[in-house]
Image 1 (tube, rainbow, N blue to C red):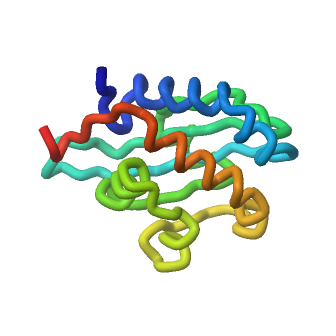
Image 2: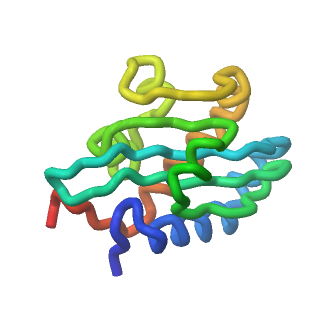
Length: 139
């Protein structure tokens, strides 16, 4: 059954996939940070601004969840983009670093630290595509 993009159920499905991935754990070894994916509001689709926050400790996924703005915005790394941009990441695996470099995503935080874990990021993107996801603009 499909889960709605940006919903608590979607975040829970993502957390489960990340925690089950030995490949991700190996690539993320040493990663200790908080990261928020900030998806901007898309009122034309009935999509509200959403923060999905990830907590990592030495490569282990501690939690993934939809959080209030205050909690999402205070993460060490915040990656902000439009609904359409994040949908392309989730659905097609578009490389987030290319989107940051191209100005489609705005990264707040230590870019060098993020780039050090590029392999882990690529695995995260591949896992994200495995989630059976429904999108508000396709309903």
